[in-house]
Image (tube, rainbow, N blue to C red; front, side, top):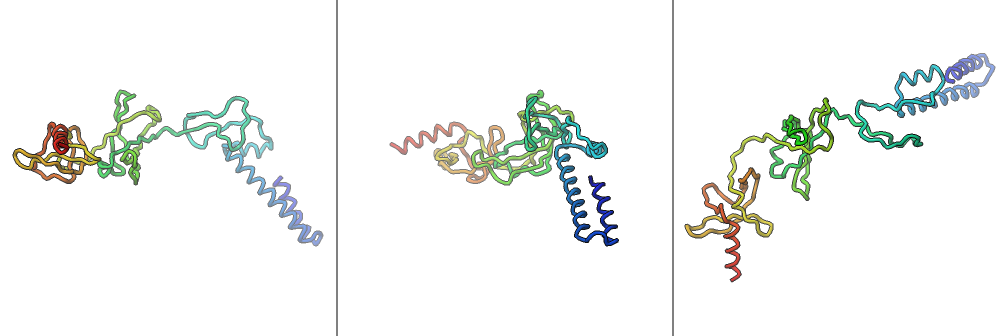
Length: 257
């Protein structure tokens, strides 16, 4: 149709130059060509949206025929992970038919306690352990660290990208993330020394050889049975490490007597 309209425009130009037709008539023929070209581009774009490749479109242009059957193709390589249609179902252009995902790279997501978030850096290499695969360990790189702390869990979300070209790992597998943080020197005490009271943390600090005083402390990172102290204690001070909870309970009883 474009070819016919193009020839019509060429003929109209010759007739106009020969004063056979008016300029308005020539412009009308040119406008018809522009409209046909616009329809062509719209139809072509629609076929591309439907997933038809250039080779298939060129075949239609050459033959002038559209096959009633056609392939639904994805714009990128991947795996069909879900299907939203059934055989014989009528669908519209806006309907989702399949969900295709590129699983060659996956994300491992971890929630880091806010006290440890400062040790995480983008592009840092971490170790991912997957229990479902006999605790197989692989290396991954941190590609994202959230800028806010989750107010419910008091954690910061980080995301690591791992290579999965062999498709060994599956989405939603449970993983453990191990972060190789730098060694730092911190004042630390046994976790058994900490007394929790009224949403605050305390330790019993030796005041005299036979007396201890309850003192509020700010806790840091826990490592096994030890926990670091950010403030409230100084190196060399003696604290109760065994039976702190019992001693504090006795203290409160005496205050009530």
